[in-house]
Image 1 (cartoon, rainbow, N blue to C red):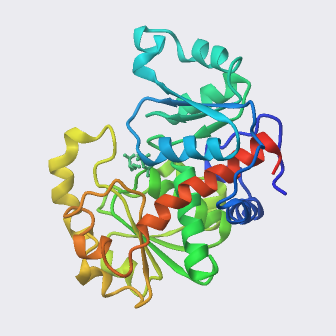
Image 2 (image 1 turned 90 degrees about the vertical axis):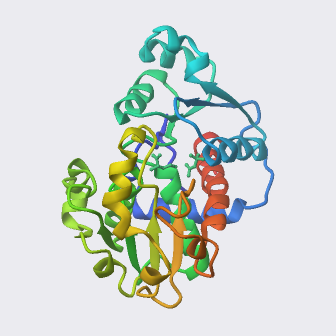
Length: 304
Ligand code: CP
Ligand code: NVA
């Protein structure tokens, strides 16, 4: 069983130990397809300042499958948009809700809501981290390959929230991760300097071929994360050599799997033939958001 501390938050993946991640993946598999009443009478609030398809829907469905309810709280529709502070908002929401999943720009804002709300808070994506997505990615690898270890992981593209979270995952689990980014776009220095990462660093490259050579798992993400739209043209030019296309994939292992958290920009970071091709596991990966989030909610709310 995962330890359920009071107000157990998931703000960053390194709040979990390797054995807790493994237990969470096992719980996700065990609960797959099951409807339970573990969260009966409990309400999840989804406090979002950015768009979402997968995260919102998978959290709402997860909560429904646990017998609870959820409420989508767009910041635009709240008094937040008229200047009410996040601190006051968090204190009030904590008196109604059982758990909050928050998607926003600054990691500090999610940390603040965790500190002020008095209820468990889940990071549903910040510009720094996307922990639920990487847990879903790990579940996808576990189900397809039967193991997480003895595999080579290659992340190509932007050193963004996905890359940062994969850097934490490889350190916690002792995996072999290679990250290839253009110069100046490596994962965040504050992530690379965490003691756990210093003890088990990823291999950083600027050459995509060096990173993908023989890889078992190939991961990419958009070159233009939410909030970076003004940099789109510059990024398209800088990131072009990191496009995951058939030529680049031919350097990976012949059984390599391709992961992308979605939404994908087909023709930019990935080509149609790769995302629709035999290596792609992106639809299973998207489905696994539901399973890992249901497992986490069951743990936090229902003591699963
Ligand atoms: N992968 C992911 O978080 O997707 P959404 O932005 O649609 O939630
Ligand atoms: N890196 C992307 C992930 C989207 C799910 C972003 O932050 O927009």
